[in-house]
Length: 401
Image (cartoon, rainbow, N blue to C red):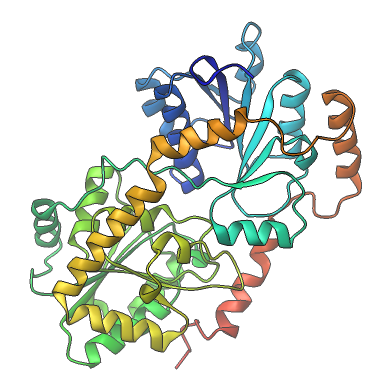
């Protein structure tokens, strides 16, 4: 493979929407360019709002079939696949078209992928992910390469925090609990409302702001009797607006029934020095325990969640200390340029074990043959099934006492 400052890198992602996978793909592509590579992006399904930012950095983006007409005179040395939403046929077409390229994957769900035999490396996002990947029989050479975090846009901003509170009628003296997420019930839990109720019942003047909550949780809020203590915001767009919200939040409370495969919102909150209290989810994705880092901020049941949050609510100095430590943890572990450099270093190293013998085209044909008889071809699709039931098994539903 050519040297780092001359390599051609193709980042592959299903779309360029606003989710965490898309943020990771965008950030890797931008960092590869800053490290000197010829960086390009293939968004398989469509562009989305992140395409404009990549265009500002003069990074070519190909959407759908544009990839084939725009690479007649350009071939990647490295293909970096972000697995969420990418189909096996997409990867196999790429490896057939560019047989000399090395392929690495950002393995979002910590499961072996149908193209594992073609991989130079499978990047696992955290130690928890590595354990899960190996447990499920992952055979590709695996390395821990987290999603990269661009730290410049997220920091504690007191002025923006005050403006955010004023705009939503939240007094400066009120302890503000907060949660930002995507509108999927698997990313949330009614436990947040139980937590608010518990905190208020102990005499704390607390308020909860939720951004991106699903309809199910909004219905729970309307039935809870806590409406006056909850602010629901449909969406916040732009990092500066997100920074204001994170900076205003005294305690970021995170409960997701399926856990997190990574958890960008956690890194963003920590960068803004908002201490994060999270619920461990060992039955599902559980990367949040690695991202938060501080074991004292990890809860294993409703009582743990209450005790930790109540302690922080009554101790501003502790909140400040935990918040500052959290920012340092994210900067040290996830800073974007260092993570991208690590990915390129692994990609350019000699393979730790040989791929399937034969040519790349033969490897692709063998993978396709296995695909036809593999019931788990749509890796990850089944993983959503248990989560709804587990909300009830773990007493996270709105009928929990």
